[in-house]
Length: 457
Image (cartoon, rainbow, N blue to C red):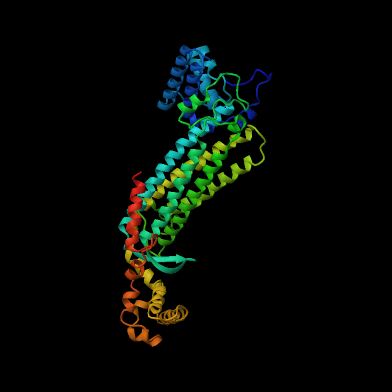
């Protein structure tokens, strides 16, 4: 069944039909399509455009179609052009002439705009739930590792000592921002396009505020041309999903590095690793690598939709049909990556001794040695040079600052005394940094309280 045809004298070429049809992918929002139709006929009856008896028959028919699709007794086939024509055809088949009134005062343009908004809103809720689950796992790692020392890096060079809690906390903040972005998008998209018609509204006395309320929107959209041609919220969503993937990819990259033989900071669970077909010793971080790789796929969806939309005049154009496969794939990719990544981080084991040893061997306490001298009255620029000599001395002997004897310290500067060892210990280096956001144990205790409050909402 086609929802158009009176104007045409020839059947559509089969190749044209296949190229034009969208049911292979827009069947994803059959629930939203039926939900929108039920709200539409409820409003039509209230406005006296159809009778109450017709509304009841249509609603019962739509509910039956929904139930049958869900339980598998009604299969969505490729004979119909789109999900809208599929539902309407089966409705008319089931209830007769009353079903032909379903589309009164409505166009496929505002119908598909509505379906896509409803679907997107639902999916944002699911993605937000997955992000919250990941944040809960990260919070558990943070709670257990406020005294797990490790090197902090800049330029991939060891810089200053931090804790695993502090390092993971950086990603906690990133994923919090991701949830905030999704929340903003939900608010902006939450206006109903239903009742906008093809582009210029309708002469029927529709109550657009009622359908908006029935569907959980904050109100109706305010320009019918914009209503059917707006894809801003999808571009925003794909941008937010790209940012989520960027954060997952950065974390994956670190896990891949940490999992290497050179670092040995983490041991990945066997369930989230694979082996080699030829090298029996291998245990590969495939999930982290796939997450990193799939990031480009989501970026591609964003760039594709931006390109589709950049030259379109008002109002609706068929080009906009391209939004669905791009968005559906990006959503599915992000949901899969979030679920697998959460499982991976929840099961990986941290090699705490290797992390602490790496912090010591990388001279991450050199800045604290310089601060020690400054506190003894040495000008910072002089202190910086003295500690540079210390590092050079240690490198030439393959030792750490902690391994130096007091005589060796004094040989470079007589200002050093026995208290230098306490000053450059990992515990001191980390825990004296207690401004909010720093890795010190007192500062981290405050952050953990804030995290628990955030996660309780």
